[in-house]
Structures are given as structure tokens and as C-alpha cells.
Image (cartoon, rainbow, N blue to C red; front, top):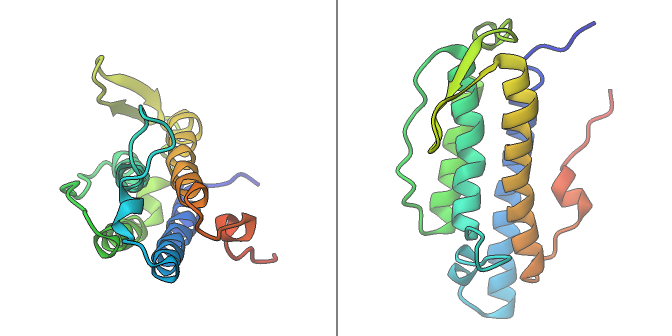
Length: 171
């Protein structure tokens, strides 16, 4: 039995973005317990040439939103990239989850061989749907989610593997 494009993406996006929301809750609680401004975490970087936490979360949301829209052949909602608070970032995550869940599976399934055009600074990259999802979207999504996790963990937020994986449901 093969796996569908929708089931290989949307549930995974929803789960990890939901986990990301919980990490933000833990980050704010950590800052409160240690008596420092939680906003400091929003600008944290792992290296000087890496984007800060806020950008990591914005990009982690953009990947699923754009992927599902491109696969479904619809326009993605536009987000302003102007979040400056934990509440605003949680709202962006919520809007992303709501959007990817709103696209009917039938619009995403069967797009394995669809040409997907990805605008880039150096020109447009065109890929078929399945390699686009498997080789471009998912690794990029996990890179930014993992970087957000690492930034928070590096700054003392009590996160572990269970927080990263979230609730694993037995089948």
C-alpha cells in the first residue's frame, strides 16, 4: 500500500508545529521562572550568521503553507513576517495549522508527478511533486523546526526528546 501525498505531509506538519507551540510555552515559563525578559529568546541565534528564533519559526510555518498550496494549485495565504512576541508567533503557527488542514486531501493527493515551480533568488527551480515534498520541503521544514528547538534548548529551556517528538500514538 502506498502513502498519499497528503498523509505524508499534513499530519506531520500539524504535529511538529503543535510541538513548536508547546516549546514556546515552555520558553516563556522558563524566562518567567528565571526572571528575565522572554523577548530575549526571540532574537537568539546559534551562530552569528544564522537567523534568529523568530525567523526560524516564520520559515518553519512558510514551508508547509507554501508546499500545500503549490501541490494543491492554490494561492497560499500571505503572512507579513512581522511577529515580535511569543503570542504573535503562536498565532502564526495556529494560522499555518488551520490552513494546511483546510486544504482537502483530494487536492494534494495525486500530485506526485505535478510540476512544482519554486521561485528562488537564483531563478526558478522546477521539481515533480513527490521529490519536491520528500527532498525539498520536508528536510527544509525539519531544519527550521530543529533549529528553533536547538535555540531554545541552548538557552536553557527544559526541552528533551519527548518534547521534540510530541505524543506518539500507537497504531
